[in-house]
View 1 (cartoon, rainbow, N blue to C red):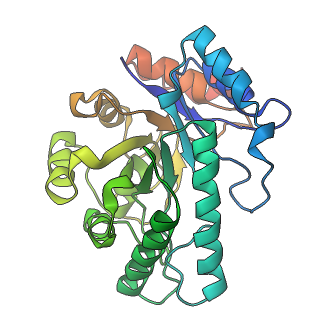
View 2: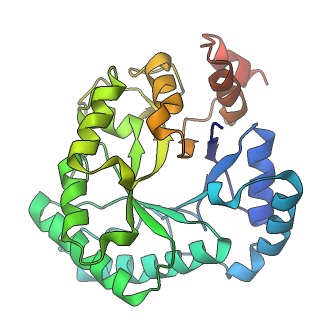
Length: 295
């Protein structure tokens, strides 16, 4: 069965319960949420998230809790060696995010590896390894995976090559709780070719191992391959194209993974219901953006 969903909001007053209902309104059977605004550290106690109500509702409608993906906030930067206070915030806040993820019942927490802030890739990668070691030693990870997201390589981002993701995993003392989030826009912008998905997956498998994939972010890109800019486009309206993204979504080697859309809003309207309909029909609709705008 296709596991397809999108980023949804988790906001007052219904929080997780509202997130589940929003996902279902898009025709989704999976979703991704943040435990709070991704740009700041303001968080409410998890006992206000309506977790029990959401769990009961998921049982009623047959929504699998394993299809709930969490995303750590962007402000977590484990690669920073320039400002010790930023690294310490990243370490301590990631510990709290793991606890929030476990309270919600999610088994995957997506994490941007970080930016080295002009200190260099090697320095940044070593700092990420140090931070992950500290976090994993401090928290009982249980069956939770931290999924390191493949990045586009803009600015001083690290994690934009499969080799860098491999090196982070290899450097962490206990990497059994480290997975990978493959983002189609990001790897395209980093220079990987999605016109031959079998070859792409073989490359990933040789370098990292497909068994370490935890989730897929499916996004088109506004940029040419290798631009290293990270600008998402709606499905089929970018440089990757509908057919290549559809091949990723339906590839048998990825069938067990949730595919999460993070595509742009159209005239302040969520595109996900229409994009998911198009993905399920396997037919590109060139009028999709107008359809969303007029919805």
